[in-house]
Length: 61
Image 1 (cartoon, rainbow, N blue to C red):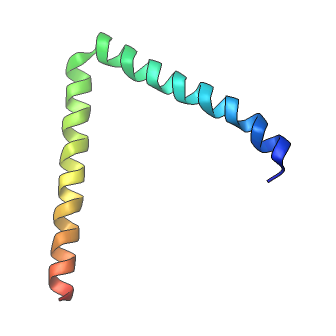
Image 2: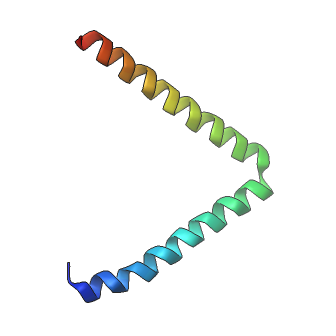
C-alpha cells in the first residue's frame, strides 16, 4: 500500500471508530435492556465457542 494512501486512511479509520463508539454509547443509554441482552448473548456465544474448543482439544489428545 502506498504511504500517502495509508496516511489518508488513518483519519478515516479513527472517525469510523469514534462513530461506532458513539453509536454504542447512544444505544446503551437509550435501550439499556437491549444492550444488556446483546452483551449476554455475546458472552454466551464466547462461552459456547470456548467450550467447543476445549472439547475439540480434549478429543485430539
